[in-house]
Amino acid sequence: MTRTKTPQRRIKYPPASRFEFRAGPYTPPAVKVGAVVHDEHYRDVEVAGMTDAPIRWPGFHLPRPGRRAGLMPILFDGLVRAVVEEDELVVAHYWGVGRTTVNLWKCIIAGCEDSNAVFTALAVKRADPAFRKKFGYPQV
Image (cartoon, rainbow, N blue to C red; front, side):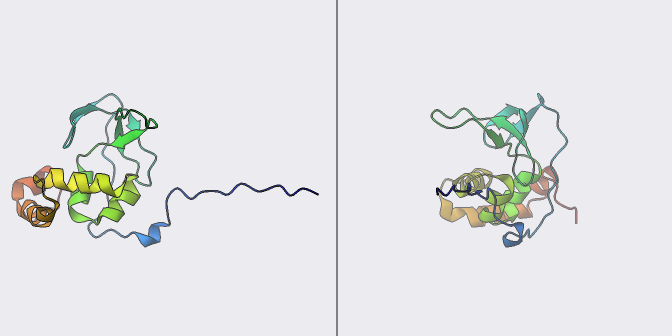
């Protein structure tokens, strides 16, 4: 008698109860496929579709040799606010990217290369009224 193994289902994303927003919720912007939007990291990119992460976000094709093709979330609108406000694990979970990508995004938004200065630089950005208006913070 041979036993057949049942395939193990791999959980793509852990339960959302482990990751809570501090400043959320975040809703995806209404953009059409083919529209060109400004990504804070890659400049102007064309929307290729929606990602399959827990928060479906407009994405673009990022050519990466030797890697599987997929959509990278476009760093604009509410995602910038999430990167500034939330922990890296929360952003990584809900937008389907790695922690390294989130740390890179934090450095890009903060405008500094040294990761030790990111916390202070983000606090300064968070207090800037022009930054708050551009990325959809609630007006006080």
